[in-house]
Image 1 (cartoon, rainbow, N blue to C red):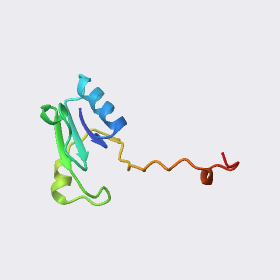
Image 2 (cartoon, helix red, strand yellow):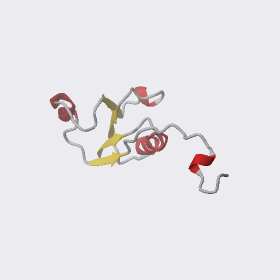
Image 3 (cartoon, rainbow, N blue to C red):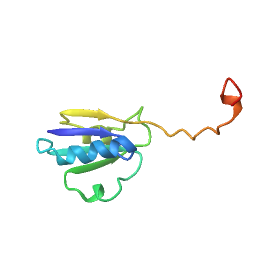
Length: 94
């Protein structure tokens, strides 16, 4: 089975990728990512990384690499800087 995984460099996505690579029925994983995968994923023969900058628009070359995918796991997200903890966020001023 060929699986497309987005968000493979994030907290949850990294674990999903780990489990997908361990699953015997998954023969390959296409990691759709904003950045290269870290070790040891970057050298795993079952992983093909496709770097994209815009998850709302895909070039023909990216689309051609996604052909034949049997399943998709979508974990694209964005980082939010932690808000400073202050009374302006708490109703009772604590």
